[in-house]
Image 1 (cartoon, rainbow, N blue to C red):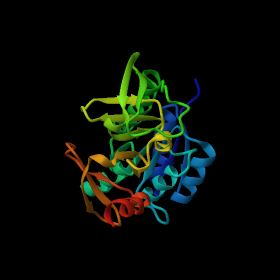
Image 2 (image 1 turned 45 degrees about the vertical axis):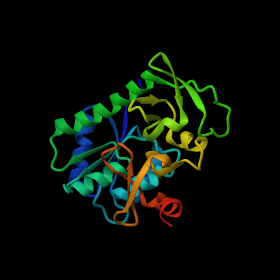
Image 3 (image 1 turned 90 degrees about the vertical axis):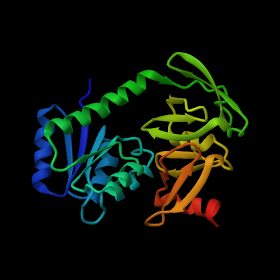
Length: 255
């Protein structure tokens, strides 16, 4: 089995060296970068299995790094964990809404860091073994809102209606479909693949990891940095749009 390759993007030299030592001792291949620009290049060149990234860095910060990676098909599925001293709820929420897979606060315990990495890597392996899609409309360019599709989930056939999908969240090369009846299905299909086949009139991509069914929108509020909080029917927590997709939401729902 090939060794796991981890990219560490951290501007503080002592922290970067410490992380390198810890991870190498655990048997990982470690690549390091001292700033966001270098980290982006190494992510594209090396294709790591997981990325650890600080938020507060000169030039491109951690938020900018994950936003750039999400725009590249070669890097958008790489698991991403933030390492940061920021402890405000808004900072944590912003990082997760941008698509981060986890958020580790500094100073961190070595055991907690290693467990977060192992959990994420194990999660990926479980996803690969549990979810398979078998879509009867696979050759169809675009679904209609009233279409029904067949999926094979955990070895059990399921038929779902496109109009009953409330939202879709990405989990690397897999996606979680949350349905009107509150059931959810983990499907081996990327968020970009769903975006290409769902009807544009009804479904909106609001950031790198989420597509929502606009028919379930019950409210939209302006948030910070030209983003929005979007409320869906019967969902308690609002979804946060990324700046990249906010112009689309503004055009379709605000103006």
